[in-house]
Amino acid sequence: MSEQHNLVLLTFTDATGWLPAFDEAQRLPGLRMAAALERGTDGVLAVKDTFTRGAGVATVGSGLLGGLVGLLGGPVGVLLGFAAGAALGNAAEEHLATESGAALIVLSVRVPNGGALLALEMRESSPGPADELAARHGAAVERIDAHTFTEQVRAAERKAEAAQTEGQEAGTPDAEGHKPQEP
Image (tube, rainbow, N blue to C red; front, side, top):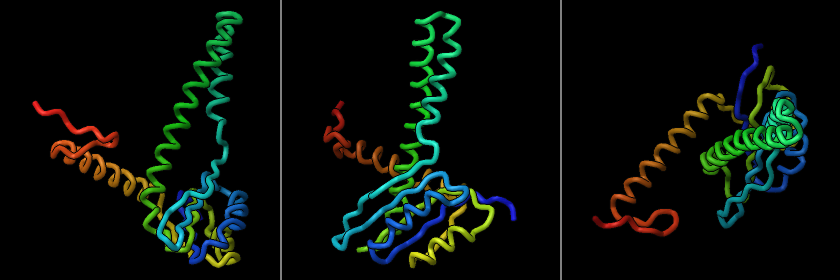
């Protein structure tokens, strides 16, 4: 079987089983990112935990590369090169975190009241490991192709931006509570 890039969703009808499953999921082959969302019986949603394999690697790696390039400029060049490289790497990681936040908003409607959802971004050569994890912890499994899900997130972002633009044109306050200026 060829490798599939999927978002694997494990849904728990009660909020007690997700933590051990989350800990085990971090060792699944091909896992890139994981997030645990929990909704109380009152309907309040919380992001309980997240995991990113290789978090910080881009920041440190870019910093080291910048430091090596900075060797040409002497000790000050190394320092400035490392700082610039780390800043660029950190910007890349921040962009990824922002995209992940939008994805969690889209997934929030799938979390049942009093339940939890584990969202696992993975490259799977076989569905077996994730399916076995779900079975051990009593979770329902759903897979969404990563490209399809990315398009769903982008569509939701476009819809939110359009609603914000319409609200501003109608005199509705923006996120900071400011109303548009009258001409």
